[in-house]
Each structure stands twice: as structure tokens, then as C-alpha cells.
Length: 94
Image (cartoon, rainbow, N blue to C red; front, side):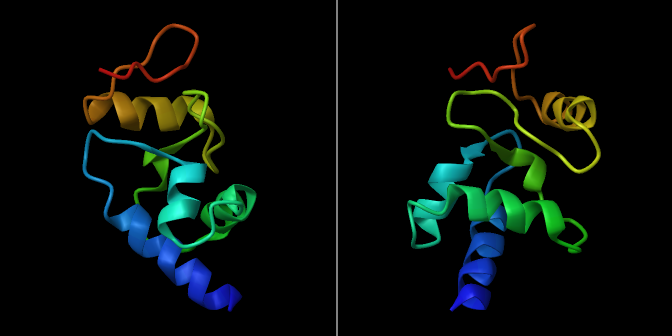
């Protein structure tokens, strides 16, 4: 069961378009368990899949959240894709 959820999380994250973001909770919900947002974070923190755009997953409050290579790198990747981020490190939703 855990492996199936992990695979679903990967599919959801791969489906996030460049320049778009989803929250950990949104990813969990789309993967089939809206209460598993912490599990989504753990899955994304431990993955070994090249090209998985896990930098596109953010906290529900708009903050960028954690990233294995540091939040500055995550912010830089998001900005490069056209995501607007304010000076406090929150995503600006249009």
C-alpha cells in the first residue's frame, strides 16, 4: 500500500507544469489520501528520481517549504520557471 501511494505521489508531481505549484496537501489529495501531506514531504525528501520536479511542491500557506538542496535553490528554480515569490519567500498567486 505504501509503495502504491509513493508511485501516485510521483505521478502527481511529474504532472505539475513548469511555472505552476501544488501544496503538499494538494499532492496528497490527488494521490488519494488528503491527510498524508507529511508523508508526501518525506517521500519527496528521499526520492532518487532525476527530473522529478519536487521543487514545485510548496506549503499550504504559500511558503516554499523544504528542499533537499536548500530553500534558496528551490526559490531560484521556481523563479527561473516564472513563479512569483515575495520578499518573505511566499508564492504570489495570480
